[in-house]
Structure formats: structure tokens, C-alpha cells
Image (cartoon, rainbow, N blue to C red):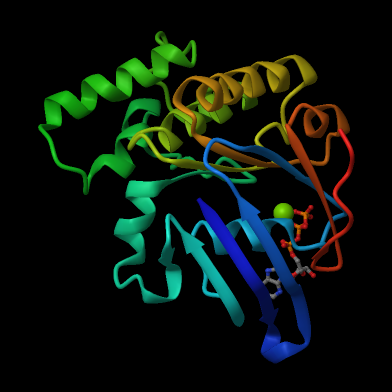
Length: 221
Ligand SMILES: Nc1ncnc2c1ncn2[C@@H]1O[C@H](COP(=O)(O)OP(=O)(O)OP(=O)(O)O)[C@@H](O)[C@H]1O
Ligand SMILES: [Mg+2]
């Protein structure tokens, strides 16, 4: 599903080496957590897998497509990947439902069906009564669940979640993980979760640790 070969990423003309020769193979339907100290390269790695940024060197294959050869990355991304960002990144001037609709703009289908789908996704997230709320009127956990609904808009094959439970209490965090794990279980969606929380990290089937832009030995489960 995902194959990463000798991936490196530098910033600031090489003064910052965020990733140092990463190799990783991820099978379809896997559930992986990535932990490691602040600055170890976790978000940079997710951004590379999610085709949000280009590597300095090395290769990433997703479903056998080399990302370097993909012409329209935005289209590829919207069809294949659901991204939950470190700080949910909801658009504050749009309602919950409108935020969920954003990734569907480019997809085929009628506007009416898309709106229905956004409502169904929000209902699944237990936000049926919040579809027309602005993010500022919602709690951190609710906002994060809107972000999850948005990430599911195009039925992605891969969900990349960067600290999905970062700014919510442990109960909401557990609920968010329950939702993501159910999708992983039922739809066989590949799930990659970056987290600082050891309890959350331990829930994954495969646990990876990063340090200085590299993987440390894989932790035993
Ligand atoms: N756009 C950028 N320009 C310059 N340096 C960057 C940029 N993005 C990340 N870095 C640097 O790359 C390194 C890895 O950053 P990254 O955001 O991947 O860390 P992280 O493991 O996600 O940390 P955190 O747990 O705090 O989110 C850090 O040293 C960071 O300062
Ligand atoms: Mg980060």
C-alpha cells in the first residue's frame, strides 16, 4: 500500500534535516502509531506520505504509484488520502457541514448527494445536532470529530492523523480513537496515527518510534 525508500527531507537549504533516510513498508489495512519527541520528524513524514510536500531525496510509492510521477497531486490526494491535521484546521467561517463538504468539491456527483453525505458523516461522529454550527461554537473534541468527518469525505484508502487527540481530554480522545479504529476495522482503511500519548500509541497494531528523523527499533507490542 505504502512503500517508502530512503526518504530524506531537508529544510532551510539543508541546515535542518527533518528526515534522514527513512525506509518503511505499510500493508493495506494496517494500523500504525508513530511516537517520538517534538521535532523528531513525525509531521514531516506524514506530510510526505500525504503528498502535501515533496521529499529532498528518496521515493514514496502509494498503491504502486510513485508520488514523484503523479502530475496532479491535489487530485491524487483527495481521492486516496484522508488527512487529520495536528490542529484540526477547520475553516472558521464555514459551518461544520460546509467544512466536511470541502474535499468533495472536486469529486463527481450532485450537490444534494454531497450534502446528504456530509450530514451522514457528521451524524456518525455524533454531531447530528451540530451540522450548522461554526467551529468556534464547538468544543475541541467536537471540532476534531468534524475534522475526522471531513477526512472521510471521499472514502480514502489511507487515513493520516497527526495528533488527532492532541487538544482534547482523555475521554474524547478515546472516543476519537474508537471511531478511527472502527473505520480501520470495517473498511480496511490503512490508519497511521502520530501521537505523544503512550496510551493512544499502544492501541495500534504496530508501533513505531522516531528520533532525529529516523525510526528507532520497532517497539514490541
Ligand atoms: N517548513 C519548515 N521549515 C523549516 N523547518 C521545518 C519545517 N517543518 C519542520 N521543520 C523542522 O523539521 C524538524 C521536524 O519537524 P516536525 O514538524 O516533523 O516534527 P514533529 O515530530 O512533528 O514534532 P511535534 O511533535 O512537535 O509536532 C524540526 O526540527 C522542525 O523545526
Ligand atoms: Mg508534529
